[in-house]
Length: 256
Image 1 (cartoon, rainbow, N blue to C red):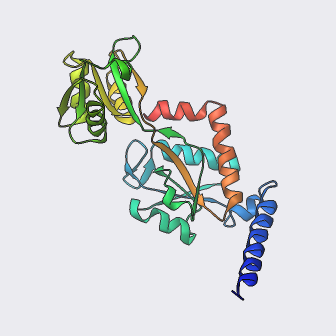
Image 2: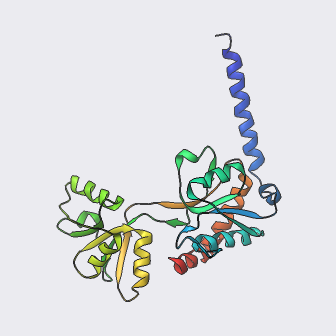
Image 3: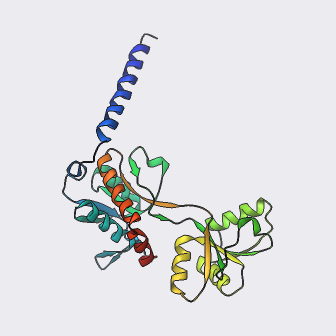
């Protein structure tokens, strides 16, 4: 019991220190403090087209172009490090890179070490329908034939809908592209796939009319070290300018 006042004093001191850190970082971000090497060092995983791919030593893809555009907005050169997916956060935390642009979902278990920007791409599940009419609403799926990749997250969602009493007809396929084939050929009333698969499929078949709606959300965001608030502010501001000016949408349309 005698230690209690000292514990309370330590907790108060810690709270005050955290408050002062927030105050110090609440002003205009300092570019030199954020990026002391004079460049924006970006960790990518160049094994996930069309986001990033290593083409005989040359990196290309949506995230490569996006990261380069963010660096230009900040006024720094971009330096890329191609890192295996499972080593990305280690590279960030150790200071090898300043930011990760690598199709990362917002991971609540990482927020002690990393801070995320707003999302730049949503790869959630979409319900696609053929034609130029509105996509099928979930509440109207009773009796409809829904194509899906077998044992995928989309298939799990279909099973949940069936368990909730929606009497739909589940049509499983080996690959998500086959599920979209079934929709395009009139063998299914709708298909449930991730957004990227749907966009790439539709891109390759420009004459095929279809519509889609998001059913779930899987946002991809940029990760920055938690203690580098200046870097986070500068990258978030640059991303917002790219979004507001339409450059982000154009990059997505170019690659996906």
